[in-house]
Length: 337
Ligand code: PEP
Ligand code: MN
Image (cartoon, rainbow, N blue to C red):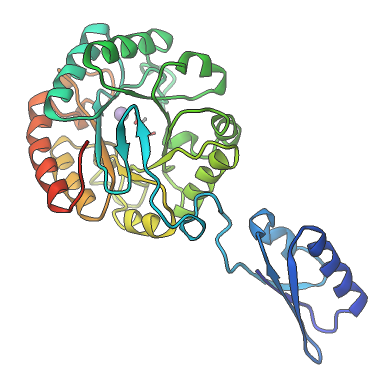
C-alpha cells in the first residue's frame, strides 16, 4: 500500500504514523521529498481500510497494491483448491454437475429427481428447503421437513446434498447436509459468513445480484478467515439494464476469478437466464471459459413447480444437456469423477 502525505506534513506527525504501522507488524519505507512524503507499507495490509487511512488529516492519497483478500488470493496459494465432497472433487481439473429442483416440494419429487439426475451423470443434488423469495406470500420452502426429504433422497440415490441456509440459527438442521449454499441475497450477510467460517463443511457461495467480483472474493475471505477453507464460488448472473433474461450471466467473471483466486468456480445457468432453453448454451459457454462445475435446476413436472418452473429442465432435457456437458468437459481436458 502506498500512502501519499499532504504537502509539508510535520516530521513528528510522519514519524507517529510510521510508528503506528510498525506496531501493526508492517514495514514502512519512507520517501521524503522537499515538500512531499510518501510511505510504502510492506506486509499483510489486508487488515487496513483505505477509507480509514484516507480520512486521516495528514493523508492526501492512498493506493492499494495488493488485493484486500489473502486467504482467497492466488498470490498466496498458487495451486487450485480442490474441494472434496464425499469423494466428488470440484476444482483443479475436476468438474461436477449439481442438479435438482429449485425447491424441495415433496418426498416423492425429491427422490424421483435425485434418481433421474444421478442416472444422467450429476455428481451432487440440489434442492432448496429454506427459500429466499421476493414476496412473503410466495412458497417459502418446506424448511426442516425439506431437509428430511433431501436426506432421504441422499440415502436412496447416494448423491451428496447442496442446500441453502438463510439463518445461522438453522445450522443444527444442516448437520448431515454435505454442502451449505449461501444464496445471492445473503452473499454479504457477514454474520452468517462468520458462522460458516467455523463449520467443517464446504460452502457454495453465490455472487450477489449487484456485487463486484472483489466483493464476492471478500465474502469468501470472511468464511476462510474463520478457518473454513472449503469455499466454492458461483457466478449466477448479475442485474443489468437487460430485461431479455432474468439476469445477465457475467461470463467474463469466471476467467477473472480463476486468475485472482485458487477457489473453484461454478456457474448457475438456470438463475442466470431464467429460461429453460438457455441452460444448454450457457452451460457450454461456462465450460469453455474454465468453470469447474454447473448447478442446474431440474424438476419432474416443471409446469407444476412451486418455484422457478420456467427455468427448470425436465429429466429428459437434463439428460440431453448432460450428453454435451460430458463431451465438452472432456474436450477441455477436465474430468468428472
Ligand atoms: C437457488 O439456487 O435456489 C437460489 C435462490 O439462487 P440465487 O441465490 O442465486 O438466487
Ligand atoms: Mn431457483
